[in-house]
Amino acid sequence: MTIPLRNTVYDKIKELFASEQLTEKDYRTLTDHMRTATMILSDGVLPSRDGRGYIPRRLIRKSMALAMRAGKPLDSLIEIAKEVMLQLSDYYPNLKDSSKAIIDATHHLCVAYKPNTAFYEAYGLKGWESLQKTIIYLNTNYPEIFTIADAKRGDIGNTSTMYAKAFFEDLAFDSVTVAPYMGKDSIEPFLEFQDKHTILLALTSNAGAFDFQTLTTDGNPLYQSVLETSKEWKNSENLMYVVGATKASYFTEIRKIVPDSFLLVPGVGAQGGSLTEVCKYGMNSQIGLLVNSSRGIIYASSGLDFATQAAHKAQVLQMEMASLIPGN
Image 1: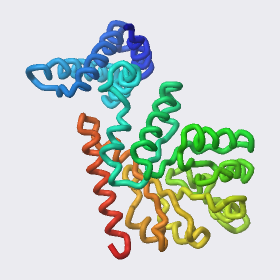
Image 2: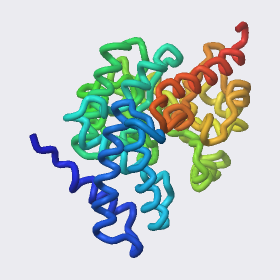
Image 3: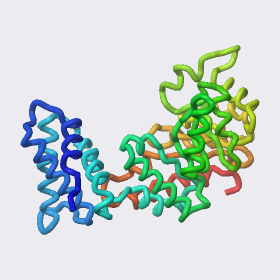
Image 4: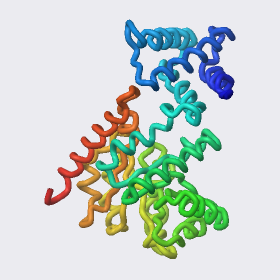
């Protein structure tokens, strides 16, 4: 069996490590070293000074030396390892998507999963197939878990209908994130689907949120107008809203507009949002919050213990939130 690996990894290395300091031989060496080291590590062999571990240790050290010669950050080697894993995942079971391991390790600690579809779409057909496998695994093994396609879609009516069909019918997600910039005819097609939820971007956690979302229109910040207007749309009871944890001081005003709606709250953890502040100002009588932490959990470790460390980080966050719920 021929595995079309070397060229794709080589191309990725040429893209990430483009440098006059590296020769064609260096690129080929880095390709072979990273491919071999990744496969050995996937078998559970840790780098060491002797035994089987000496080989991946030597290969990784040589790869690091080439990365430094090219003036590139050592983290870029992780991107190369990911490319090896992606290309070999259908042929080498130990290199399968890490999503399953993280789900199995954390499912008892959370109520929802939110795959960011861009990180799957970037890999074309293989990425889309990986997303499909992930949602099938979730729906089959943990059907009680709420699923969110973090796709941020939003377009004219017919196009939005097709997006909705893709995520709600074909992939069978429970919900999808959408952008409100094009107004109700870009959002109402999503709201037509029974037992599905549409999560509207209201006030996001990124720094660029202040470019538009807080601008004053008719005496009110734009994000408040979005919230008020969205309540008038057909099937608006199927709406939820994205409000970033880094904007905790805004929750009081937001709750005056949508007191009973669920809020999806990203930005806790890596982005610096305060869970205490979010719960203080955003929680309603039914809790009403889906607090999201992604990078702080899935990237808790870059080693073979990534799933265990992800579970530990998730448990810490869960315990913190439990302590903030009245009556607990």
